Amino acid sequence: MVARDGPSGAYRLGPEIISLGASALPTTDLRLIAHDELVRLTDESGETATLEVFTDAEVVVLDEVQSRFLFSASPEARTITTRAGMERELGRIRHNGYAVAVDELENGLVAMAAPVRNHLGYVVAALSLNGPTFRLGPKRRRALVGKLCRAANRVSGRLGASVNSTAKRRTNAGASNGI
Image 1 (tube, rainbow, N blue to C red):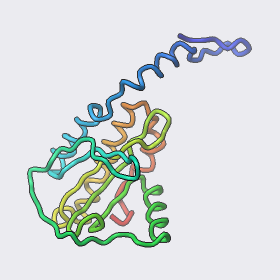
Image 2: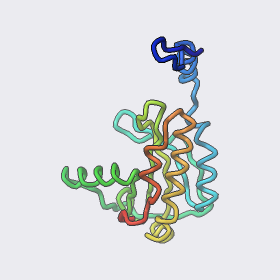
Image 3: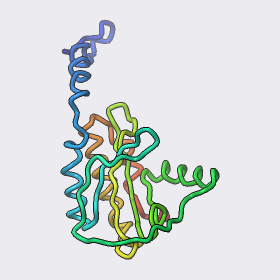
């Protein structure tokens, strides 16, 4: 399980433990791992929480815990339509460690998302909070984005990700990032 380095005498993980860890990866059920965090987010926020993955150029919702509130929105939306606008937004998302869409997906809808990373540090999913604009104004979004990021970090940790590097970026989530 462990191996000892000859010259230094230091111990390190041996090939057996690495193999054991790799054999557990296919049995990891992302939906099961994230569900409790979705329930917690919905309980704490009163808004709908989702687990989403990007596959074949589409966002697929793997799990959803619905809010106790219903709302309706018109089909009109403000969407980023230029490459320069999209590049600016992606830069902001990378810098902040989360995304916020206000009236972009649907008029009257706010969606906030934080990445879920796997053991290699790759983004494999996102946790999202969604609700109507009249309930998720700037002050409320600032209050919730930290909870959302911490929940995504906990799910990432359960997938074997090292969350320290992403957690540092999110410690002041929402403080002055245009939420």
